[in-house]
Length: 116
Image (cartoon, rainbow, N blue to C red; front, side, top):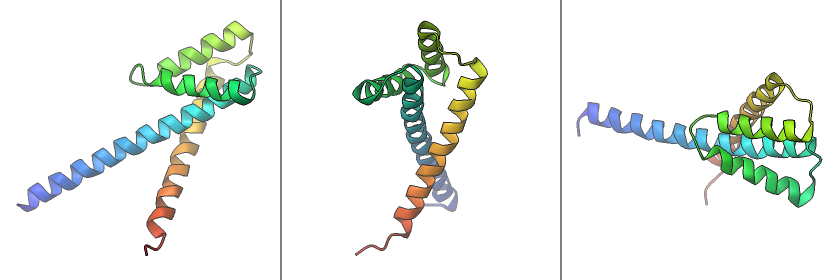
């Protein structure tokens, strides 16, 4: 195997890892976003968990965040919840940053954990 082939495989592995992390972060963000929205909508307990799961599933329908945004916007409008588009998008961004940080922290802790 040439050096170029090794670099190409390493790049492909990193890209696959980055995509996996991005997917995990989006799922985590959407769960937290769903719980935040459920609270705004007056949902608690299992109903809140179900709403969060529905939001995670909604994000799998198309590429990008617009499907999630549209669901939140429609549900807030239907329930009379006062949240601007900007507030919803800001919360989406904040929770994505938090999800990425949590995943990185967990990954770093797992890497540092001694193996027996």
